[in-house]
Length: 114
Image (cartoon, rainbow, N blue to C red):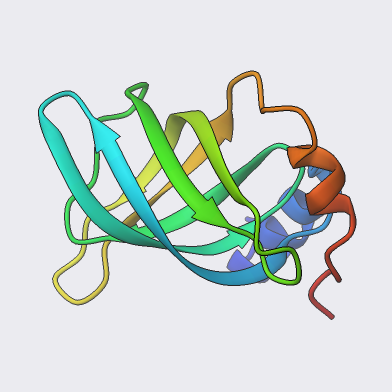
């Protein structure tokens, strides 16, 4: 039986690129919902967003946020691939859908987590 640490390590090895801590406020929109969230981490394939409400799996979310050391705001569309509805801290993981020009290059310029 695999351990939690072993499973997490295997997932990290399968990632397109390393995760980078971002800590950026974001505007979120899906369906009739419009709220603020917080982009906690990002890589070339997607991101994890902390938010008071989470969309359903497969839902498309439109986000607007800025990456560190750039100041430029990006409008990004992503599909929800996992959710963590919790009492204290809920959020969701999302995969980018046709990221805008310059966005992936901006992510490449960020420093990965140690």
